[in-house]
Length: 104
Length: 435
Image 1: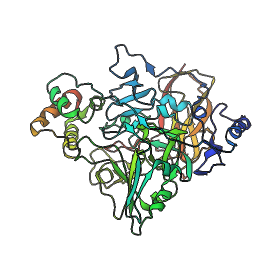
Image 2 (image 1 turned 90 degrees about the vertical axis):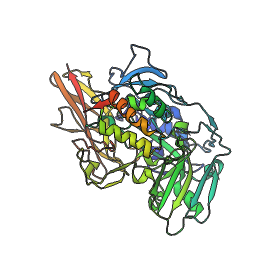
Image 3 (image 1 turned 180 degrees about the horizontal axis):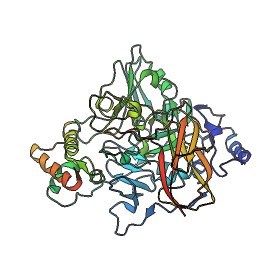
Protein backbone atom coordinates (compact mmCIF):
# COMPACT_ATOMS: atom_id res chain seq x y z
CA UNK A 1 0.00 0.00 0.00
CA UNK A 2 2.83 2.37 0.82
CA UNK A 3 4.07 2.76 -2.76
CA UNK A 4 0.61 3.81 -3.86
CA UNK A 5 0.43 6.34 -1.07
CA UNK A 6 3.77 7.74 -2.13
CA UNK A 7 2.74 7.88 -5.73
CA UNK A 8 -0.40 9.77 -4.88
CA UNK A 9 1.51 12.11 -2.67
CA UNK A 10 4.15 12.86 -5.28
CA UNK A 11 1.58 13.25 -7.95
CA UNK A 12 -0.26 15.77 -5.88
CA UNK A 13 2.58 17.65 -4.38
CA UNK A 14 5.61 17.24 -6.58
CA UNK A 15 4.62 20.03 -8.89
CA UNK A 16 5.84 23.60 -8.91
CA UNK A 17 3.85 26.57 -7.74
CA UNK A 18 1.94 25.75 -4.58
CA UNK A 19 -1.31 27.60 -4.05
CA UNK A 20 -0.90 31.17 -2.97
CA UNK A 21 -2.69 31.42 0.31
CA UNK A 22 -5.23 34.13 0.81
CA UNK A 23 -7.26 34.63 3.95
CA UNK A 24 -10.90 35.59 3.74
CA UNK A 25 -12.61 37.97 6.13
CA UNK A 26 -15.01 36.35 8.54
CA UNK A 27 -18.38 37.50 9.80
CA UNK A 28 -20.32 34.95 11.81
CA UNK A 29 -22.89 34.66 14.57
CA UNK A 30 -22.32 32.81 17.80
CA UNK A 31 -25.25 31.25 19.65
CA UNK A 32 -26.22 33.26 22.71
CA UNK A 33 -27.09 30.40 25.01
CA UNK A 34 -30.27 31.82 26.47
CA UNK A 35 -31.27 28.83 28.60
CA UNK A 36 -32.30 29.80 32.16
CA UNK A 37 -31.60 28.05 35.44
CA UNK A 38 -34.22 25.52 36.55
CA UNK A 39 -36.94 26.87 38.82
CA UNK A 40 -36.37 26.87 42.55
CA UNK A 41 -35.64 29.27 45.38
CA UNK A 42 -32.86 31.56 44.21
CA UNK A 43 -33.13 30.71 40.51
CA UNK A 44 -34.01 34.31 39.68
CA UNK A 45 -30.95 35.57 41.56
CA UNK A 46 -28.77 33.08 39.71
CA UNK A 47 -30.30 34.12 36.38
CA UNK A 48 -29.73 37.80 37.15
CA UNK A 49 -26.15 37.46 38.34
CA UNK A 50 -24.55 34.57 36.47
CA UNK A 51 -25.82 34.66 32.90
CA UNK A 52 -24.23 37.93 31.86
CA UNK A 53 -20.85 36.23 31.63
CA UNK A 54 -21.68 32.58 30.91
CA UNK A 55 -24.55 30.38 29.88
CA UNK A 56 -26.34 28.21 32.44
CA UNK A 57 -24.89 25.01 31.01
CA UNK A 58 -21.56 25.71 32.67
CA UNK A 59 -23.23 25.20 36.02
CA UNK A 60 -25.71 22.51 34.99
CA UNK A 61 -22.93 20.27 33.64
CA UNK A 62 -20.98 20.40 36.91
CA UNK A 63 -21.00 17.38 39.20
CA UNK A 64 -22.41 17.61 42.69
CA UNK A 65 -19.83 19.56 44.71
CA UNK A 66 -19.47 20.28 48.43
CA UNK A 67 -20.62 23.61 49.83
CA UNK A 68 -17.06 24.85 50.31
CA UNK A 69 -16.35 24.36 46.60
CA UNK A 70 -19.44 26.30 45.56
CA UNK A 71 -18.47 29.08 47.96
CA UNK A 72 -15.02 29.14 46.40
CA UNK A 73 -16.51 29.27 42.89
CA UNK A 74 -18.76 32.22 43.73
CA UNK A 75 -15.86 33.92 45.47
CA UNK A 76 -13.72 33.47 42.33
CA UNK A 77 -16.47 34.87 40.13
CA UNK A 78 -16.75 37.97 42.35
CA UNK A 79 -13.19 38.68 43.35
CA UNK A 80 -11.13 37.49 40.40
CA UNK A 81 -13.55 37.59 37.49
CA UNK A 82 -15.12 40.76 38.93
CA UNK A 83 -18.75 39.70 38.56
CA UNK A 84 -20.75 42.58 40.06
CA UNK A 85 -22.72 40.47 42.53
CA UNK A 86 -24.29 42.31 45.47
CA UNK A 87 -23.28 41.09 48.92
CA UNK A 88 -26.93 40.40 49.71
CA UNK A 89 -27.23 38.02 46.72
CA UNK A 90 -24.23 35.87 47.53
CA UNK A 91 -25.91 33.63 50.07
CA UNK A 92 -28.95 33.10 47.85
CA UNK A 93 -26.74 32.08 44.91
CA UNK A 94 -24.73 29.64 47.01
CA UNK A 95 -27.92 28.14 48.49
CA UNK A 96 -29.36 27.75 45.00
CA UNK A 97 -26.19 26.09 43.66
CA UNK A 98 -26.21 23.66 46.56
CA UNK A 99 -29.89 22.94 45.96
CA UNK A 100 -29.21 21.87 42.37
CA UNK A 101 -25.59 20.63 42.62
CA UNK A 102 -24.77 20.06 46.27
CA UNK A 103 -22.75 17.18 47.70
CA UNK A 104 -21.61 16.25 51.17
CA UNK B 1 1.42 -4.26 2.56
CA UNK B 2 1.26 -1.43 5.03
CA UNK B 3 -0.44 -2.21 8.25
CA UNK B 4 -2.92 0.63 7.86
CA UNK B 5 -4.41 -0.08 4.46
CA UNK B 6 -6.54 3.00 4.11
CA UNK B 7 -5.01 5.31 6.62
CA UNK B 8 -3.69 8.64 5.50
CA UNK B 9 0.01 8.90 5.32
CA UNK B 10 1.15 12.44 5.01
CA UNK B 11 4.25 12.02 7.10
CA UNK B 12 6.51 12.23 4.11
CA UNK B 13 5.31 15.74 3.64
CA UNK B 14 5.76 17.07 7.06
CA UNK B 15 7.61 14.98 9.57
CA UNK B 16 9.05 17.61 11.80
CA UNK B 17 9.07 21.30 11.17
CA UNK B 18 9.81 21.79 7.52
CA UNK B 19 10.38 25.04 5.78
CA UNK B 20 8.14 25.10 2.76
CA UNK B 21 9.28 27.14 -0.18
CA UNK B 22 7.46 27.81 -3.40
CA UNK B 23 9.05 24.86 -5.11
CA UNK B 24 8.76 22.42 -2.23
CA UNK B 25 5.69 20.55 -1.14
CA UNK B 26 2.41 22.34 -1.25
CA UNK B 27 -0.49 22.26 1.09
CA UNK B 28 -2.35 19.13 1.98
CA UNK B 29 -5.81 19.29 0.45
CA UNK B 30 -8.41 18.84 3.15
CA UNK B 31 -10.01 15.95 1.28
CA UNK B 32 -6.98 13.81 2.05
CA UNK B 33 -7.13 14.82 5.65
CA UNK B 34 -10.79 14.17 6.08
CA UNK B 35 -11.21 10.90 4.24
CA UNK B 36 -12.15 8.29 6.80
CA UNK B 37 -10.24 5.06 6.97
CA UNK B 38 -12.23 1.86 6.84
CA UNK B 39 -13.91 0.78 9.99
CA UNK B 40 -12.84 -2.76 10.79
CA UNK B 41 -15.10 -3.15 13.74
CA UNK B 42 -18.46 -1.55 13.90
CA UNK B 43 -19.41 -0.45 17.35
CA UNK B 44 -22.72 0.80 18.57
CA UNK B 45 -22.96 4.53 17.98
CA UNK B 46 -22.50 6.74 20.98
CA UNK B 47 -25.23 9.02 19.79
CA UNK B 48 -28.79 8.14 20.57
CA UNK B 49 -31.77 10.25 19.75
CA UNK B 50 -33.18 12.04 22.71
CA UNK B 51 -36.61 10.92 23.84
CA UNK B 52 -37.72 14.46 24.45
CA UNK B 53 -36.86 17.35 22.19
CA UNK B 54 -33.37 18.42 23.11
CA UNK B 55 -33.04 22.07 24.08
CA UNK B 56 -32.16 24.87 21.68
CA UNK B 57 -29.01 24.01 19.79
CA UNK B 58 -29.10 20.27 20.25
CA UNK B 59 -29.31 17.62 17.52
CA UNK B 60 -29.04 14.62 19.81
CA UNK B 61 -27.89 13.58 23.25
CA UNK B 62 -24.66 11.74 24.03
CA UNK B 63 -23.75 9.97 27.24
CA UNK B 64 -20.32 10.66 28.68
CA UNK B 65 -19.43 8.05 31.32
CA UNK B 66 -18.34 10.57 33.96
CA UNK B 67 -18.39 9.11 37.47
CA UNK B 68 -21.38 10.53 39.34
CA UNK B 69 -22.67 12.42 36.29
CA UNK B 70 -24.28 14.40 34.95
CA UNK B 71 -23.67 12.27 31.87
CA UNK B 72 -25.93 13.68 29.21
CA UNK B 73 -24.73 16.33 26.79
CA UNK B 74 -26.36 17.61 23.64
CA UNK B 75 -24.49 17.50 20.37
CA UNK B 76 -24.77 20.57 18.24
CA UNK B 77 -24.06 21.83 14.74
CA UNK B 78 -25.02 25.35 15.74
CA UNK B 79 -21.57 26.98 15.70
CA UNK B 80 -19.97 28.63 12.67
CA UNK B 81 -17.77 26.35 10.53
CA UNK B 82 -18.40 23.51 12.95
CA UNK B 83 -20.06 20.15 12.47
CA UNK B 84 -21.38 17.90 15.21
CA UNK B 85 -19.66 18.63 18.51
CA UNK B 86 -20.52 17.90 22.12
CA UNK B 87 -21.97 21.01 23.74
CA UNK B 88 -20.29 21.53 27.10
CA UNK B 89 -21.09 25.24 27.31
CA UNK B 90 -22.66 27.63 24.82
CA UNK B 91 -21.17 30.91 26.03
CA UNK B 92 -18.24 31.26 26.08
CA UNK B 93 -18.08 28.18 23.85
CA UNK B 94 -16.78 24.85 25.15
CA UNK B 95 -17.27 22.27 22.40
CA UNK B 96 -15.84 18.76 22.62
CA UNK B 97 -14.78 16.46 19.80
CA UNK B 98 -16.88 13.25 19.79
CA UNK B 99 -14.40 10.47 20.48
CA UNK B 100 -15.27 8.41 17.40
CA UNK B 101 -13.73 11.20 15.29
CA UNK B 102 -10.29 10.08 16.49
CA UNK B 103 -10.87 6.68 14.88
CA UNK B 104 -11.36 8.17 11.44
CA UNK B 105 -8.04 9.82 10.61
CA UNK B 106 -4.78 10.81 12.21
CA UNK B 107 -5.64 14.47 11.71
CA UNK B 108 -8.70 15.90 13.39
CA UNK B 109 -10.96 17.69 10.91
CA UNK B 110 -11.34 21.42 11.47
CA UNK B 111 -15.10 21.23 11.71
CA UNK B 112 -14.93 18.74 14.58
CA UNK B 113 -11.87 20.17 16.31
CA UNK B 114 -12.69 21.04 19.92
CA UNK B 115 -13.24 24.62 21.04
CA UNK B 116 -12.45 26.33 24.32
CA UNK B 117 -12.78 30.03 25.20
CA UNK B 118 -12.33 31.75 28.53
CA UNK B 119 -14.26 35.00 27.97
CA UNK B 120 -17.44 35.55 26.05
CA UNK B 121 -16.55 38.80 24.29
CA UNK B 122 -15.23 37.19 21.11
CA UNK B 123 -15.11 39.22 17.90
CA UNK B 124 -17.42 37.67 15.33
CA UNK B 125 -16.29 39.88 12.48
CA UNK B 126 -12.66 40.02 11.44
CA UNK B 127 -11.51 41.98 8.43
CA UNK B 128 -8.33 40.58 6.96
CA UNK B 129 -7.38 43.96 5.49
CA UNK B 130 -7.40 45.89 8.74
CA UNK B 131 -6.23 43.20 11.19
CA UNK B 132 -2.82 43.92 12.73
CA UNK B 133 -0.47 41.92 14.90
CA UNK B 134 1.49 44.16 17.29
CA UNK B 135 4.99 43.24 18.44
CA UNK B 136 6.18 45.57 21.16
CA UNK B 137 7.73 45.90 24.58
CA UNK B 138 11.39 45.17 25.15
CA UNK B 139 12.31 45.34 21.46
CA UNK B 140 14.41 47.55 19.23
CA UNK B 141 11.50 48.44 16.96
CA UNK B 142 7.77 47.98 17.58
CA UNK B 143 5.90 46.35 14.72
CA UNK B 144 2.33 46.43 13.50
CA UNK B 145 2.10 43.62 10.97
CA UNK B 146 -0.68 43.16 8.46
CA UNK B 147 -1.74 39.67 7.48
CA UNK B 148 -0.20 40.20 4.05
CA UNK B 149 3.12 41.01 5.69
CA UNK B 150 2.91 37.88 7.82
CA UNK B 151 1.96 35.68 4.87
CA UNK B 152 4.97 37.01 2.99
CA UNK B 153 7.38 35.64 5.61
CA UNK B 154 8.90 32.17 5.12
CA UNK B 155 6.34 29.60 6.19
CA UNK B 156 6.68 26.35 8.07
CA UNK B 157 4.46 23.32 8.63
CA UNK B 158 4.12 21.04 11.61
CA UNK B 159 1.66 18.39 12.73
CA UNK B 160 0.99 18.80 16.42
CA UNK B 161 -1.48 17.78 19.08
CA UNK B 162 -3.40 20.56 20.73
CA UNK B 163 -4.81 19.41 24.06
CA UNK B 164 -6.60 21.32 26.81
CA UNK B 165 -4.84 21.20 30.19
CA UNK B 166 -8.12 19.93 31.61
CA UNK B 167 -8.86 17.29 28.99
CA UNK B 168 -10.59 14.35 30.74
CA UNK B 169 -11.27 16.45 33.86
CA UNK B 170 -14.67 14.78 34.20
CA UNK B 171 -12.92 11.53 35.19
CA UNK B 172 -11.17 13.01 38.23
CA UNK B 173 -12.30 11.45 41.49
CA UNK B 174 -13.16 13.21 43.68
CA UNK B 175 -14.67 15.40 40.99
CA UNK B 176 -13.42 18.95 40.58
CA UNK B 177 -15.15 22.05 39.14
CA UNK B 178 -14.36 23.27 35.63
CA UNK B 179 -15.23 22.20 32.11
CA UNK B 180 -16.42 18.62 32.53
CA UNK B 181 -14.62 17.21 29.52
CA UNK B 182 -14.51 13.59 28.54
CA UNK B 183 -11.42 12.72 26.47
CA UNK B 184 -12.25 14.89 23.47
CA UNK B 185 -10.68 18.22 24.44
CA UNK B 186 -7.81 17.47 22.09
CA UNK B 187 -7.05 17.32 18.41
CA UNK B 188 -4.20 16.82 15.96
CA UNK B 189 -3.72 19.15 13.03
CA UNK B 190 -1.28 20.22 10.36
CA UNK B 191 -0.42 23.78 11.30
CA UNK B 192 1.02 26.22 8.78
CA UNK B 193 2.39 29.59 9.69
CA UNK B 194 5.52 31.54 10.42
CA UNK B 195 8.13 31.02 13.06
CA UNK B 196 7.61 33.20 16.09
CA UNK B 197 11.39 33.59 16.11
CA UNK B 198 11.33 35.25 12.68
CA UNK B 199 8.73 37.76 13.83
CA UNK B 200 10.62 38.51 17.04
CA UNK B 201 13.85 38.92 15.09
CA UNK B 202 12.22 41.51 12.88
CA UNK B 203 11.36 43.53 15.97
CA UNK B 204 14.76 42.86 17.53
CA UNK B 205 14.54 41.46 21.04
CA UNK B 206 16.65 43.58 23.38
CA UNK B 207 19.16 42.14 25.82
CA UNK B 208 17.55 41.49 29.16
CA UNK B 209 14.29 40.12 27.74
CA UNK B 210 12.85 37.42 30.01
CA UNK B 211 9.49 36.36 28.66
CA UNK B 212 7.22 36.98 25.71
CA UNK B 213 3.52 37.54 26.40
CA UNK B 214 0.69 36.73 24.01
CA UNK B 215 -2.76 38.30 23.94
CA UNK B 216 -5.72 37.71 21.67
CA UNK B 217 -8.79 39.70 20.68
CA UNK B 218 -11.11 38.03 23.19
CA UNK B 219 -12.10 40.09 26.23
CA UNK B 220 -13.92 39.60 29.51
CA UNK B 221 -17.45 40.92 29.87
CA UNK B 222 -16.41 42.90 32.94
CA UNK B 223 -13.59 45.21 31.92
CA UNK B 224 -11.78 44.88 35.27
CA UNK B 225 -11.56 41.09 34.97
CA UNK B 226 -8.16 39.70 33.94
CA UNK B 227 -7.70 39.65 30.16
CA UNK B 228 -6.53 36.23 28.99
CA UNK B 229 -2.78 36.36 28.32
CA UNK B 230 -0.05 33.73 28.39
CA UNK B 231 3.72 33.94 28.35
CA UNK B 232 6.66 31.80 27.32
CA UNK B 233 10.28 32.19 28.38
CA UNK B 234 12.16 34.12 25.74
CA UNK B 235 14.40 31.16 24.82
CA UNK B 236 11.34 28.97 24.28
CA UNK B 237 9.68 31.69 22.20
CA UNK B 238 12.80 31.85 20.00
CA UNK B 239 13.40 28.11 19.66
CA UNK B 240 12.28 28.07 16.02
CA UNK B 241 9.44 25.62 16.69
CA UNK B 242 6.89 27.93 18.25
CA UNK B 243 4.76 29.13 15.38
CA UNK B 244 2.22 31.79 14.56
CA UNK B 245 -0.24 29.70 12.55
CA UNK B 246 -2.66 30.99 9.94
CA UNK B 247 -3.70 27.61 8.56
CA UNK B 248 -5.00 24.43 10.08
CA UNK B 249 -5.23 21.31 7.92
CA UNK B 250 -4.72 23.38 4.80
CA UNK B 251 -7.47 25.90 5.47
CA UNK B 252 -7.70 29.18 7.31
CA UNK B 253 -8.48 28.68 10.99
CA UNK B 254 -12.14 28.49 11.94
CA UNK B 255 -13.00 31.61 13.93
CA UNK B 256 -13.56 29.48 17.00
CA UNK B 257 -10.08 27.96 16.71
CA UNK B 258 -8.50 31.39 16.59
CA UNK B 259 -8.86 33.04 13.17
CA UNK B 260 -6.82 34.69 11.80
CA UNK B 261 -3.70 33.83 13.85
CA UNK B 262 -3.04 31.40 16.65
CA UNK B 263 0.11 30.58 18.54
CA UNK B 264 1.26 26.96 18.18
CA UNK B 265 3.45 25.73 21.04
CA UNK B 266 4.36 22.15 20.07
CA UNK B 267 4.30 19.69 22.95
CA UNK B 268 2.76 22.14 25.41
CA UNK B 269 -0.82 22.33 26.61
CA UNK B 270 -3.26 24.40 24.64
CA UNK B 271 -3.52 27.14 27.23
CA UNK B 272 -0.39 28.61 25.61
CA UNK B 273 -1.78 28.35 22.08
CA UNK B 274 -3.33 31.83 22.23
CA UNK B 275 -6.18 32.30 19.75
CA UNK B 276 -6.94 35.41 17.66
CA UNK B 277 -3.40 36.47 18.51
CA UNK B 278 -3.03 40.21 17.94
CA UNK B 279 -0.47 41.33 20.52
CA UNK B 280 3.01 40.08 21.36
CA UNK B 281 4.81 41.86 24.17
CA UNK B 282 8.43 41.16 25.05
CA UNK B 283 8.87 41.48 28.82
CA UNK B 284 11.99 42.33 30.76
CA UNK B 285 10.63 40.63 33.86
CA UNK B 286 8.55 37.53 34.54
CA UNK B 287 4.85 37.74 33.74
CA UNK B 288 2.79 37.74 36.93
CA UNK B 289 -0.63 38.10 35.33
CA UNK B 290 -3.43 35.95 36.77
CA UNK B 291 -3.39 33.41 33.92
CA UNK B 292 0.29 32.64 34.51
CA UNK B 293 0.71 33.09 38.25
CA UNK B 294 -2.55 31.68 39.62
CA UNK B 295 -4.62 29.96 36.96
CA UNK B 296 -3.17 27.04 35.01
CA UNK B 297 -0.74 26.08 37.75
CA UNK B 298 -0.05 22.51 38.84
CA UNK B 299 1.49 20.90 41.89
CA UNK B 300 5.26 20.61 41.46
CA UNK B 301 5.04 16.86 42.16
CA UNK B 302 5.31 13.67 40.07
CA UNK B 303 2.37 13.59 37.61
CA UNK B 304 1.22 16.89 39.14
CA UNK B 305 -0.55 14.71 41.65
CA UNK B 306 -1.51 15.42 45.25
CA UNK B 307 -4.00 14.05 47.75
CA UNK B 308 -7.31 15.93 48.00
CA UNK B 309 -6.89 18.52 50.73
CA UNK B 310 -3.10 18.27 50.77
CA UNK B 311 -1.50 21.59 51.75
CA UNK B 312 1.97 23.07 51.63
CA UNK B 313 2.43 22.19 47.98
CA UNK B 314 4.41 24.36 45.60
CA UNK B 315 2.50 25.21 42.42
CA UNK B 316 4.14 26.00 39.09
CA UNK B 317 2.73 26.97 35.67
CA UNK B 318 1.57 23.98 33.65
CA UNK B 319 3.82 23.42 30.65
CA UNK B 320 4.64 20.35 28.56
CA UNK B 321 2.21 17.54 27.83
CA UNK B 322 2.62 13.96 28.97
CA UNK B 323 2.11 10.67 27.08
CA UNK B 324 -1.39 9.33 26.42
CA UNK B 325 -2.87 6.51 24.38
CA UNK B 326 -6.41 5.50 23.52
CA UNK B 327 -8.34 2.72 21.85
CA UNK B 328 -10.55 4.39 19.27
CA UNK B 329 -12.50 1.52 17.67
CA UNK B 330 -13.81 -0.24 20.78
CA UNK B 331 -15.51 1.46 23.68
CA UNK B 332 -16.61 0.43 27.13
CA UNK B 333 -19.75 -1.66 27.03
CA UNK B 334 -19.09 -3.12 23.59
CA UNK B 335 -19.56 -6.84 23.08
CA UNK B 336 -16.72 -8.76 21.39
CA UNK B 337 -16.75 -12.36 20.17
CA UNK B 338 -14.72 -15.01 21.96
CA UNK B 339 -12.29 -17.15 20.00
CA UNK B 340 -11.87 -14.94 16.96
CA UNK B 341 -9.17 -12.53 15.91
CA UNK B 342 -10.22 -8.99 16.76
CA UNK B 343 -8.61 -5.74 15.76
CA UNK B 344 -7.94 -2.98 18.25
CA UNK B 345 -6.58 0.30 17.05
CA UNK B 346 -6.16 3.81 18.25
CA UNK B 347 -3.91 6.76 18.78
CA UNK B 348 -1.02 7.64 21.05
CA UNK B 349 1.09 10.71 21.61
CA UNK B 350 4.22 11.25 23.64
CA UNK B 351 3.45 14.72 24.97
CA UNK B 352 6.55 16.72 24.09
CA UNK B 353 8.28 13.72 22.51
CA UNK B 354 7.51 11.06 19.94
CA UNK B 355 6.19 7.56 20.55
CA UNK B 356 8.62 4.70 20.99
CA UNK B 357 6.19 1.96 22.00
CA UNK B 358 2.50 1.22 22.38
CA UNK B 359 1.44 -1.85 24.33
CA UNK B 360 -1.96 -3.48 24.57
CA UNK B 361 -3.47 -5.79 27.14
CA UNK B 362 -6.60 -7.87 26.65
CA UNK B 363 -6.50 -9.35 30.14
CA UNK B 364 -6.77 -6.33 32.41
CA UNK B 365 -3.05 -5.61 32.49
CA UNK B 366 -1.76 -9.08 33.38
CA UNK B 367 0.07 -9.39 30.07
CA UNK B 368 1.01 -6.87 27.41
CA UNK B 369 1.72 -7.16 23.69
CA UNK B 370 3.46 -4.57 21.59
CA UNK B 371 1.18 -2.96 19.00
CA UNK B 372 2.17 -2.08 15.45
CA UNK B 373 2.75 1.62 14.95
CA UNK B 374 1.42 3.59 12.02
CA UNK B 375 3.25 6.23 10.04
CA UNK B 376 5.40 8.65 11.99
CA UNK B 377 3.93 12.09 11.34
CA UNK B 378 6.45 13.84 13.53
CA UNK B 379 7.15 13.83 17.24
CA UNK B 380 4.29 16.16 18.17
CA UNK B 381 1.58 14.27 16.24
CA UNK B 382 -0.85 11.53 17.14
CA UNK B 383 0.64 8.16 16.19
CA UNK B 384 -1.79 5.51 15.05
CA UNK B 385 -1.38 1.95 16.31
CA UNK B 386 -3.15 -1.36 15.86
CA UNK B 387 -3.04 -4.94 17.05
CA UNK B 388 -4.94 -8.19 16.47
CA UNK B 389 -5.88 -10.06 19.57
CA UNK B 390 -8.10 -12.87 20.73
CA UNK B 391 -10.30 -13.29 23.77
CA UNK B 392 -10.42 -17.00 24.64
CA UNK B 393 -13.34 -17.15 27.02
CA UNK B 394 -16.68 -15.46 27.53
CA UNK B 395 -17.19 -13.03 30.37
CA UNK B 396 -16.18 -9.50 31.30
CA UNK B 397 -12.73 -8.30 30.31
CA UNK B 398 -10.67 -5.12 30.51
CA UNK B 399 -8.76 -3.91 27.46
CA UNK B 400 -5.92 -1.53 28.22
CA UNK B 401 -3.42 0.48 26.20
CA UNK B 402 -0.26 2.23 27.33
CA UNK B 403 2.50 4.07 25.55
CA UNK B 404 6.08 5.07 26.17
CA UNK B 405 7.49 8.24 24.67
CA UNK B 406 10.75 8.45 22.79
CA UNK B 407 12.19 10.17 25.84
CA UNK B 408 11.32 7.09 27.91
CA UNK B 409 8.32 8.49 29.74
CA UNK B 410 5.49 6.02 30.37
CA UNK B 411 1.87 6.46 31.39
CA UNK B 412 1.11 5.87 35.08
CA UNK B 413 -1.13 2.99 36.11
CA UNK B 414 -2.91 5.04 38.76
CA UNK B 415 -4.78 8.26 38.02
CA UNK B 416 -3.25 11.56 39.09
CA UNK B 417 -5.32 14.06 41.05
CA UNK B 418 -5.13 17.81 41.53
CA UNK B 419 -7.77 20.40 42.34
CA UNK B 420 -7.78 21.91 38.85
CA UNK B 421 -8.24 18.60 37.03
CA UNK B 422 -5.10 18.99 34.90
CA UNK B 423 -2.74 16.58 33.12
CA UNK B 424 -4.65 13.34 33.31
CA UNK B 425 -2.73 10.58 31.53
CA UNK B 426 -3.48 7.36 33.39
CA UNK B 427 -3.46 4.11 31.37
CA UNK B 428 -6.95 3.87 29.89
CA UNK B 429 -9.22 0.90 30.48
CA UNK B 430 -12.03 -0.28 28.23
CA UNK B 431 -14.47 -2.73 29.80
CA UNK B 432 -15.92 -5.13 27.25
CA UNK B 433 -18.24 -8.10 27.33
CA UNK B 434 -16.93 -11.24 25.64
CA UNK B 435 -19.64 -13.50 24.24
